[in-house]
Length: 127
Image (spheres, one colour):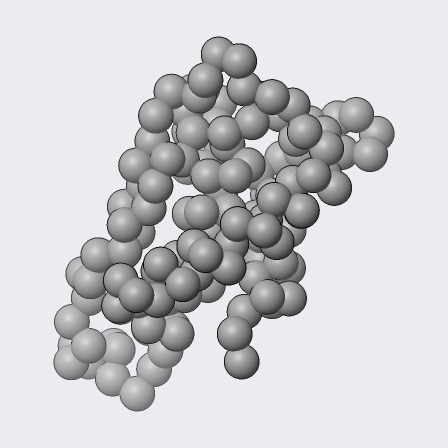
């Protein structure tokens, strides 16, 4: 799904967690089942979008995700949904660029970007 968004020339402009699951449903009771769905707000990527390196992508994640995490928390997203919710702002950083280049000058894949977003989340997440 995310790769299709990127391939269509769109970027993730925002994400909105929406409480869609009933916590009292039998499958959710006593589990860490997700309580929210994430709606993606997408826009056409700027024609003059820059190409950045993997290292620049990681720097941007470390700089921008803490504020995004704070905003997500203020929106009422609980700990169970937080890691999934962080993907939106991370993909926003990834998708606003024409490409993110790997060390060998190949274009980073969405799969790799997601792995890096999750790794940075683990580094910066609050206690």
